[in-house]
Every structure is written in C-alpha cells, then in structure tokens.
Length: 97
Image (cartoon, rainbow, N blue to C red; front, side):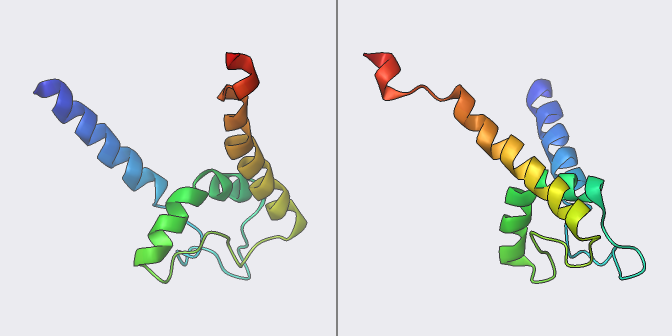
C-alpha cells in the first residue's frame, strides 16, 4: 500500500511539473520570447500539450511568441529524437523469421 501511494504521488508531481510550463500558458510575450531550450522542452511535452489543448483552449502545442529559427530547431530536434527514437526499439517483422 505504501509503495502504491509513493508511486501515485510521484506520478501526480511529475504530471504537475510537466504541464507547469506548456506553450501558450501566458508566460511568454513579445519582449520575452521562447528560445532554443524552451523549444526543446515544448517538443518533449508535445503529447501532453496536445491532450491539455483538448480541455483548455489557452494551451498550445507550439509557442507563438518565439525567437524563430532557434526555437524551431529545438522543438523539432526534441520531436524527432523523442518520437523517432522509439523506432529503434521496435522489432521488424523480418527479424522474427
């Protein structure tokens, strides 16, 4: 019972941490645009942002107030490394034969 409680608390804390700085939360403005590292973070939490966007119309998957090319580089690097990297762990049908 104690182990389940600890795991539940860790999951809730992790979820709260992940959604605390989603794109479109109002923390960025034209004078304080999101940069490269924000792009990486937003790319990593893109699936969570997508689900959050269904329930809150202020949350976005992509930050509108960004630095441009550098934000895009960080965002797409995180998307490709996170989701493209999953294919490395999949077994192909030809490997099973």
